[in-house]
Image (cartoon, rainbow, N blue to C red; front, side, top):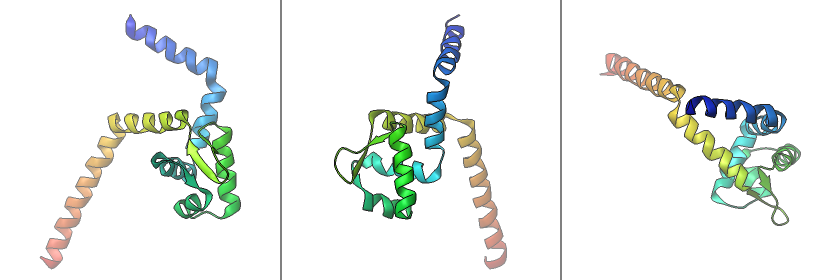
Length: 128
């Protein structure tokens, strides 16, 4: 019964907050914006620092930063400085926890090990 209630609460949360959740997922799903969020885990960064981290041009970086600010994942505490919001950090941590517990991660790690073993065997057969 408790599990059912939890599932019901989950569905209700998505029903009530669907657009807000979708906005956050869209903001996080871009690889450059995810790089920005990860870079900001260490603290405030300047526009120049983020430009270097992302290898983006000024206009593109400005657009990505605006999207993250509009999604309330980052903010500008000072001129030319950017920082994660508490929600931004919370979402990044939630992704990390979910990934660590996921079957996808296990599959990726297993396939990676298999590829490495194959590569080692292949190299030994030719150069070994």
